Each structure stands twice: as C-alpha cells, then as structure tokens.
Length: 216
Image 1 (cartoon, rainbow, N blue to C red):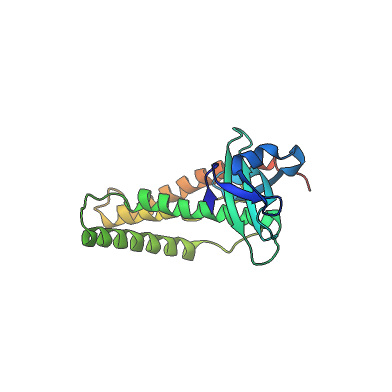
Image 2: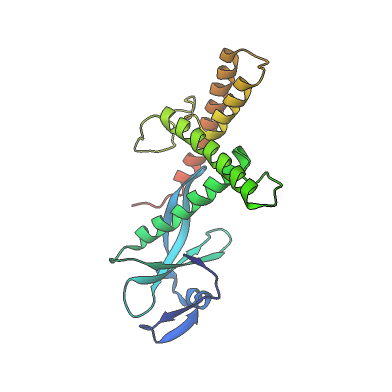
C-alpha cells in the first residue's frame, strides 16, 4: 500500500516509531538495489529500491523507491504471509502501474471521464458502458496478439509491425463504422504503416534502456 512520507513506522523490533522519510535518510548507500518494477512503453522501469523490516516480525516491510534521476522517494507498507525477497516486493509494487494505465486508457480511449451528470443512475450507466467498451477493445487486442515471446514488446526487427493495440483497434472501428473516405484496404495499409513506425520507436527505446541494464 502506497503511503505518505510522514507515515510513522515501527523499527528496532517494534520499539521505536519513526517517520518513513527519516528511515530512508538513515539508510546506507549499500542498502539500495536497482530493480525493474516491470516493462513500460519505453522499456524496463528501473529505480533504486530499499526495504526495512518493521514491527516485531519479519513479514512487514517498509519498501522505498528512489527515482534515479530526481531522487524523489515513494513509500509502501508491505505484508507477506511468507518471507519474500526484495525483488518480489518490487514486482508486486509495479502492478499498481498497470491499474493506473487501465484508468488512463479508459479516459483516453472510451471517455471514462467525459460526462456531465449529477446523479448516481446516469453516472453508473456511463461508467458501465465505458468499461464495457474498453473490455471489448482489450479482448479484441488480446485475441489478435501473437504468442508471448521471451522478450515481450520487443520486435525482432525495426521493420516489423507491433501487435494491434487498443487505440489502434478503436481507430479502425471508428473509421469503418462511419462513412469512410477511403477503402478498407487503404485504412488497413495505414494501420500497418503506423504500427511499423511504433515498432521502430519501441525498438529504439528498449535498445537505449538495455544499455543501462545492470550486468548479472
């Protein structure tokens, strides 16, 4: 659970209550490890991470993320039923981004926040239809995607087109359901052209990020 820097946590086997940012300031340089919290649109999302056991047991942790560029800190309170590694906690923390990306996609692609209603019934109808539309687009995108490779989201060649995405499918549906100004073959040709250029951009981003990946 993401928490504020002013959150007080128990250290020294639960005997001392200290602010989270104070704990982070006391950590030695060796306590920070570089991990990726998952792949983003431009490659792995690397940050510096540290963790501190809090409470009286070894299942509660304060997880700290430090931006490698700005030094900005973020804090998470964690609990696990069994002992886990720092890398596992980082992976779980990274799942939060996929939720935020889902809301961002819903707002941008199906108008989740494009309403001017003032009562529950109309709001509920709008939200339900928007999420249903996003679920449909996502299912279509998933059904057209190739099988997962060992290098997800990385095209083998710059000239290879990326898989159909939710925005691309929405665009195709929009132009096909409205009076078209071009033939269907022409629209699909433009779609392939766009996705090839997106593949080139993605390939370049990952190649640049790969140069910064830690060895070993």
